[in-house]
Image 1 (spheres, rainbow, N blue to C red):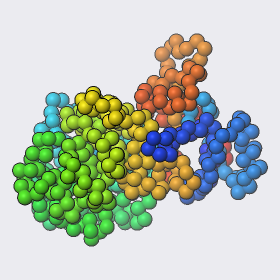
Image 2 (image 1 turned 180 degrees about the horizontal axis):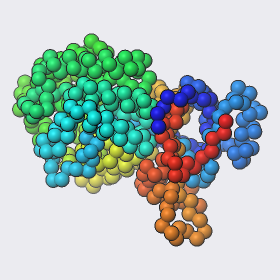
Image 3 (image 1 turned 90 degrees about the horizontal axis):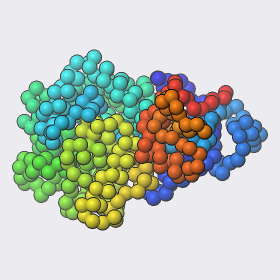
Image 4 (image 1 turned 180 degrees about the vertical axis):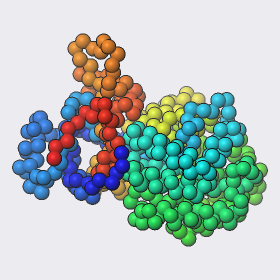
Length: 479
């Protein structure tokens, strides 16, 4: 579904839920949200009563400026609701074909066995187009309205990813991966630091020519991680970030073997974080993925630099990297969002990583014998929306349903179990069953811990419909 159609002034009627703070999830059993032609929320009505027809008549009478607005009404106000779009703060788009493949590997041998061979194939433009078209569709179907993408070293393939995101209407930070050291295989690395600089600059210029205002697609400088880059390459990327005023994304302290490798490659630096600091890569526009094993000194440096953190719980478990101490990072004041880290992560779903974030915090609680490190459902949902928005620098526009923010949203539909239950095995609305006795908090929690993309029936970005399932649309549109 392309996102080229003009945006209509629209009123969305139905239940909605969103985070208003780290620990508070507002759930409205029936509300209305008005979105103008720019995709911006102009009013939010709460605590409404009555049926759709009654509400529509009331809005047309009381809001003359919205009399000609399109109306999107959720059919079932007991099993359907609006929720903000998810924000994936760390994902490797070219690794999509390898999703679910990690076997018995840990990080460094996983890269050699699975990742580098797959990414090197993107020198073929047809491979890039096929994989990226599929993956953007897949992430949209899971309610991901914004993604920070790692691409490959290939400029044409990276530009293709930006083209597809813009065409489909998914907000994206798209980065050409930089890697020139001997840690990377000879068949898949930049020829030199200068070549890496020039290729990254070319991709930045192309992406900005596509979307000069960065409304939907932005470039992001992407040194893969310190071991894959020479000091000259890291310096070149730090210089390019300053010259072009571009965001930066990379990995840090994901795996203990990786940390030891960094120490051996950069013996003059006090820590992994200091490697990036020395090359001018830490700052308010930097996203650091993983942060599983940061020392106290590193955490202070990251916080003082204003860097943002992407927590990738499914990947950290799959590759046996460890349990990131997210409660500690939040208590210290770090800005944290969630990342799928496909294909280290086994799912392109941020919802899956919401529950994995909760599970990882509980495993950590058992390790340290303290419930204080646990994350609540509300906190994990905040990381998936508001936290992610802050990580990618869009907290003023995204994350919730407040006046002035933009309509990046998904419509969720849960299964309504009739009096006789399902006897034919046709669970059309997905894996979540609602029996009627549940409170709204119960229904949302059921979705969090049992839901999947089958429950996401429609997705909007900046007011444009970018995904809709044709099986159970679950809503009505009225012109």
